[in-house]
Image 1 (cartoon, rainbow, N blue to C red):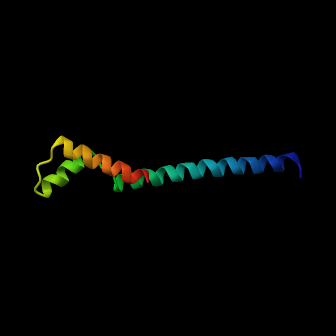
Image 2: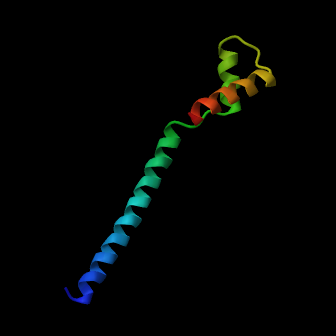
Image 3: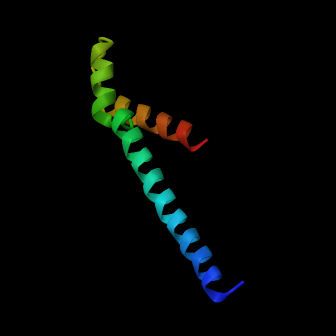
Length: 72
């Protein structure tokens, strides 16, 4: 195989990696836009909708529970 054949293989490999990276990045950005991660404000609103008065201590406990579940 001539040297330009190897060069074409390397170029195709690098191009595939670049295209795959940008497609995966776009997919993740769209996913996070549709399903945003839970933050303190969302927990506060959820507790108020359930009829509870959210204190900062309760919100911190909920955030810690969620973070522990996500790490498993």
